[in-house]
Length: 107
Image (cartoon, rainbow, N blue to C red; front, side):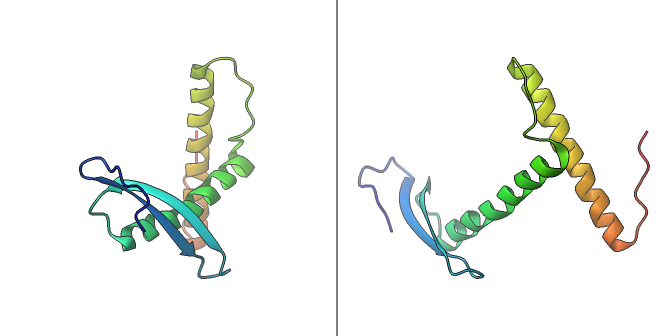
């Protein structure tokens, strides 16, 4: 449902209500994007939010994403980058192990 009258040329705002297929819970979103965006695309992108949140939660639990005490942005950026790289490696190792393939050794 469009929610703003003063759209910029070619852009739009919508209110999206999305029901979870598993829990039945309804989540509401205010969306902004190209005016020709389809409802199917809005719902798909809103649904991707849960997978992204799970990824960040796993990175916090397994790779220490949230355990930093830094004083400037360079140290924060280095910590976040290394934590996300460690989480990516753990995810690949987990999927290889599930397939039965050997995990490559690190040096």
